[in-house]
Image 1 (tube, rainbow, N blue to C red):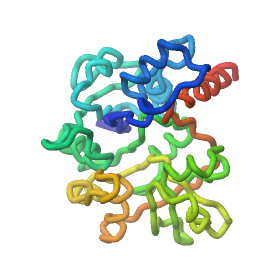
Image 2 (image 1 turned 120 degrees about the vertical axis):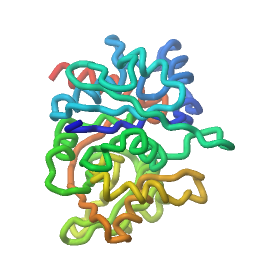
Image 3 (image 1 turned 60 degrees about the horizontal axis):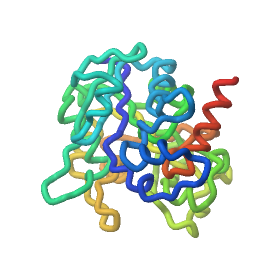
Image 4 (image 1 turned 90 degrees about the horizontal axis):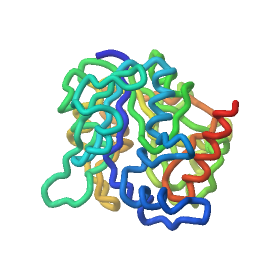
Length: 286
């Protein structure tokens, strides 16, 4: 398997389902937003989902294999992208599936680090190679997907310029902010920071660098840190940034930040559906 992108699509979409709809979203789309994974919600007249557009960008960036990590009920994903566990052909790329099982005693998935760990267990060949990882509810550009595929770094992530993302401070506090040394090696990453401390993460150029959960990993470097990732005591999840920080602290792998200044359309709440649909319509016109 070569040129691999792992897309994490096993989350519960809780914030989307709890969010209120405004008058810009039609009733049928609201119904879908309340019942299916965010990445599968149809956007605009085409009926294509964010995952369709993300996969299209990945193909243009040069990926040959995409692994979708879904929850235990993946019927709608299989209907859209192929009925087999491995080697489905969809729009010029091979689509494979991994399942994030919910541990006994929990009602929701155990977080992004657990999702990637279960994926590596089901695809042990990933432990012997390099691969990219991203979320299913952000529309990453062809450019950043290609950077993660082609970079010479074993482990890397995109370090977005906060100001270029176009989100307000409250929205930024839902992501993660980062610090790097002068050689762009990751020093710290803080998931879901309090808005009051975000500005303390400015770099030497005065920029706040934000993670939107797009990474490149060496499987052999990250595996043990996914397996032994501690549970966040507040959110009760195993989070990928925690595993990354532990890998860096353990000196078994360095993580480099690649600075990028561009927007990343995000699908978190129902109000984002209209914004993302308008963005895609503009992109289609261009």
